[in-house]
Length: 348
Image 1 (cartoon, helix red, strand yellow):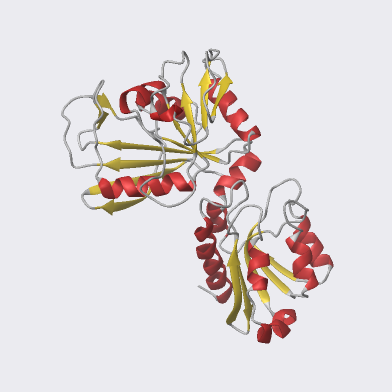
Image 2 (tube, helix red, strand yellow):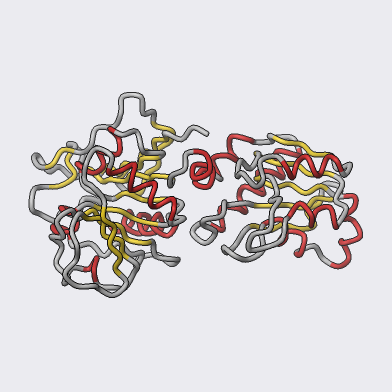
């Protein structure tokens, strides 16, 4: 790596620390460097609070602030141009007369879209764009998906036995172990919502929370066409915001439970994702059964798939979903005796 790549990678690493707390904003990291010395760094820690550039500049020690007008700031995503919850970061950079800005990727949001880059250059700032661009886009993939595809980023997840089954009809079967369960609960904190279908809700009676990991619990989404899930089930306990997608009118209103009426036809998923986009739900972790997962594959409405494979043998049961032929495994990790394969369908 050259120096620009080195410091941009540091900014990417920092941005990961904000996972689960930034949405619907993107994950962003920033590093301020003077003469090959990091004098400030930060990341977007919490939605509604300071952006990465704000936190990085604020972290510069008093003794080093005199060097800001000779420094370089590295940012994973183009600085914001507009007033939102906070003032524009591009103006903050100009205020401190930072003469060089290195950016991972352009922000395609309609209120930014290269405007900050143009403003900086017109002010005489040297701007370098596209350093570690693919890594920067991958970092911001949830946000970029909502901007470009007008829908949430979709993560599909399932656990399968060594012989290719995800369960057995009418039975709740634990396929992965406690270590994997903790990881899955971490994944839940990183996405805005989590989704299952009716059968999974009835048979497994899941809580869909993150009790085995710290962080913000996701919004629960359940597809329940005929409102078959009884009020005694965990999904309707009111402990988390729950969205029930149905064709029916509920007989009673439950605490912290919202109902969304949609037709259960071949446009169900596109219509649902459009509604979730309007509600500013940036990403969804789909933990449904084989049928629901297969519908997402068939509609090509998925961006990432994580497949946990256990050494267990079930010998019979519900076959695991079939990944599209074009799906390529990007990487694999191991936890105990289980493997986790990661597939991406993300193209921005």
